[in-house]
Image (cartoon, rainbow, N blue to C red; front, side):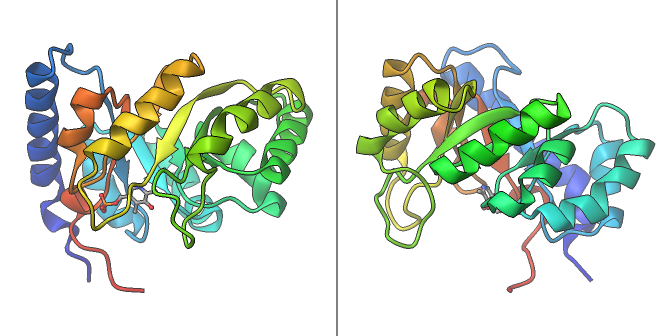
Length: 226
Ligand SMILES: *Cc1c(COP(=O)(O)O)cnc(C)c1O
């Protein structure tokens, strides 16, 4: 049993909070894409959120998404599926086939594998480079000081179009300086997309220019502990 029975009501509350943050930041309503993070929740928990009109969803594992989403997509047209978890190069083919947006490009090997699959499949998911904004040893992502060079390599060496940057700030610190840092790196590289803000801080990310927020537990309830 999961805690997702209230998900449609919680989705409405998240939407209202997001709209309020957009107004407060002087941004048009609907400017920020809400990615509902459905990882670990079974299809029967996700369907009511689809019925409530939500269409952007995030998953962090390729295998889980592959098991869950093809059937849901048949029932609910217009789904946009986002990969927000770490990607292994041996899963690049499945990721390119399944996802519309990949948020976790974080090393040359992945960039190269994605470029190869995009060419082979003739299908190009929108791509985000993950930045390890806090420089944390245990976290994925390119270090802030190495991001400009990595973006240049994605473009020049692998021929990839990168839409924006993604980050997960250190969880025990105020996120605002990290949101500002991601915005600064994106601006100086001419990138428009900023994937930042989760359940605890998505409204804080809006004034810093978030274009996608990734919200899981505030919509679906708490996840079972791994
Ligand atoms: C799980 C996850 C989220 C959603 O987290 P919540 O705190 O439940 O909103 C967002 N982004 C990434 C990368 C995640 O892995």
